[in-house]
Image (cartoon, rainbow, N blue to C red; front, side, top):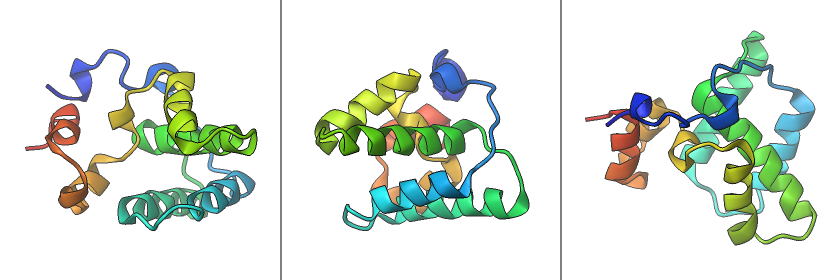
Length: 124
């Protein structure tokens, strides 16, 4: 099974491309900084910075991560804890939870992702 096996893998973000905005990236970084450092998350932030620096649009896992973290940050600002905000942010865009990290990041940090992540992306 792979990403193509999940008809709603990217939910409402499917086939969407968008620009990374510096102000929104700063919101994400501030949000992320309240948690213990997780190297895959830092790598996703680097991917967003690179897209911003190169003026490239994001899509797929990068967009899923970007919008998820923005929504999660907004929900937590409203007083929700992470355990409530995280699934709410996933549901908001109708994405698979496995869509939040790019396959390159999953491959770079295999110890942080179980077989379900690899299966979802078709990574052997």
